[in-house]
Image 1 (cartoon, rainbow, N blue to C red):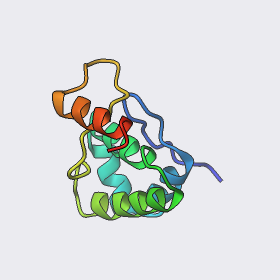
Image 2: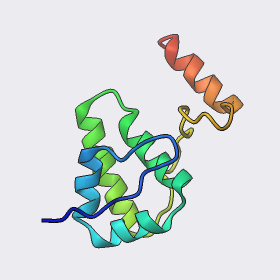
Image 3: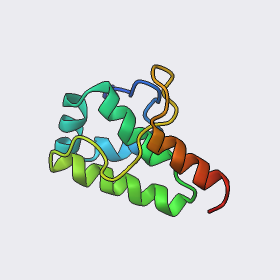
Length: 103
């Protein structure tokens, strides 16, 4: 069986669990391929930047549902801090600083 190529983000490759979930929904996959590489990157980073497996599964489920409904980016998230093409925003620095101090 030939696997469909699913486009990556700018700083992240699509992890296998997200790839599998996207493949299970033609609507989500269509939106995925229509959004920009930066938008795909946001979904990937939002999915992988969690602390627990349970949260990761929830983010993947939610990503597929929201992409299937036409949503282009995850809501209420500070954005990918792994990008090398731009510096972090003040809000990202604030959240990262707060998180690293255990607050």
